[in-house]
Amino acid sequence: MSTIDRDAPVAIHTQISDRIRLKIASGEWPPHYRLKSEPELAQELGVSRGTLRRALSTLIEEGLLRQVRGRGTFVTSTIIEPAIAQKLSTLTEDFARQGVVTETAVIACELMDPPKPVAALLEAGVGSRVLRLVRVRSTEQGPVALLHNYVRADIAPGIEQQDFGVQSLFGVLEQTYRLKIASARRTFSAEPASDEVSAALGLPEGAPVQYLQQVTYLDDDRPVEYSDVWIHSGRLQVTSLLSRR
Amino acid sequence: MSTIDRDAPVAIHTQISDRIRLKIASGEWPPHYRLKSEPELAQELGVSRGTLRRALSTLIEEGLLRQVRGRGTFVTSTIIEPAIAQKLSTLTEDFARQGVVTETAVIACELMDPPKPVAALLEAGVGSRVLRLVRVRSTEQGPVALLHNYVRADIAPGIEQQDFGVQSLFGVLEQTYRLKIASARRTFSAEPASDEVSAALGLPEGAPVQYLQQVTYLDDDRPVEYSDVWIHSGRLQVTSLLSRR
Image (cartoon, each protein chain N blue to C red):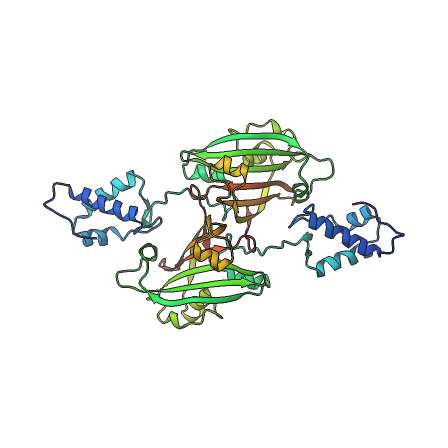
């Protein structure tokens, strides 16, 4: 970084935070960039660690930087990043963990005869019914995901009477119905936004959306839930922290 | 399923395999659908288990069904499904595990000054160089992925002389350079195909592609590699098998 102007009418810590803000805005310091250690950075800038810390505090308060104990200071991602590729958590759970405030609009919550491919994947016998749940999840930025869930009603009788505007689907299955959700198979692909998806997420028709398809299994190996989820990639990115061994 | 015509000039096992083929083609039995158990299915069709098995064998040979020991018989997915969202494996490793034959075309393999955001994420100091590796992976169906990798040359000196048409990047890092790859951060999003991506993957410009961004870390916590990967979702779907606990 260029040197600090000690004769400028602007406080030194403000000069430093301005420069860092610029580096973040220009993309030179991209999301997840780890800053040098405080002693290194302070030396490079020729300022005291106290002055540097004051500059960093400002940027942390603004949400541009975040500190991770034992790891250092990082540039914040401006995009919400649920870890749903890595763990069998749900969007609701990941949002809650990250302190993201969301709203859920329930578009449909009704019993129906399952569409044939859904019936097959849920191993639903002839005449069996499923809950069809259609929801839109939104954050402050606007809608981030459109969810279509199908749940076997024989496994969770009466589930259509639950209020999914306030409760999560996994929450209801695990707490109200005492079901043991064990595993899921999720696939990820890029799809063009259909009429319905573009209207729900506020995207142009045909725009790329992140599509997830999932089948969820109980601990006795019965499939309980099938879902199609479409995600607005500009507002939410699926993240995995992976280990080699 | 409708009953078998015992007076037809077509063998009973052929009638059965024809019907199953139709169910798969129509989507009534979608990819990953688990067939009923052999005794159930034989009873439903009114045939012996031997006849049923002969029909299933035909479909397994055709690649439409696959049997998993202790789990049953499933409809095969027609799309390759690497588990790279779930594990820190690479496309090469997942292809090899699934017996998928791939070809790699090396488009570029050269040392360069890292672009600024890459330098930041790789914590590459001033004046340090990176390997820029550009590859296209193809299967029988055509190109499935375009990969841009950037590797810190100070950690793997001479890496630009390796032949990445035959060797994998992780293979070279782990075996030739004896580096311990420990973890990675991957994000998944849907993007419109750029000029370069559409040309490499044979997609129209602006068509949705699955985009992965990754930073890979060594066991001493140094970032060693950054990559951008664009995947043809019609030919390859990223899959995760996830556990709740």
